[in-house]
Length: 137
Image (cartoon, rainbow, N blue to C red; front, side, top):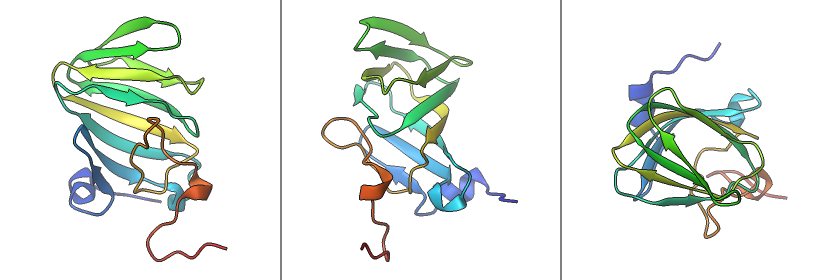
């Protein structure tokens, strides 16, 4: 059984921050669950361009408001508490938080923990990630 406290994760190296968001990564690849689980805050006034080419993601909005634009379909959806969106086709999208948005996120395959978005808006594939102290073959 794995038990972690969100506040403890926020004070550890499992909490990853960028200019546009912060993400407390409660479950990671090395937890061997087959997915990773994050509590993420996207900051008000930012415009987050993302395109997860190597991962599928589901997001449940817990607090806050904004929009998500599906760039492939040209459709914009409202985000508010209780709204879930799933990027089931590696969808290119833009999230525009009006207020800070607190959400719970699941990634498959799981992330290793230190990922940040690359220039295309994706996280690198796990095979390309090297955690501190690991050797590659």
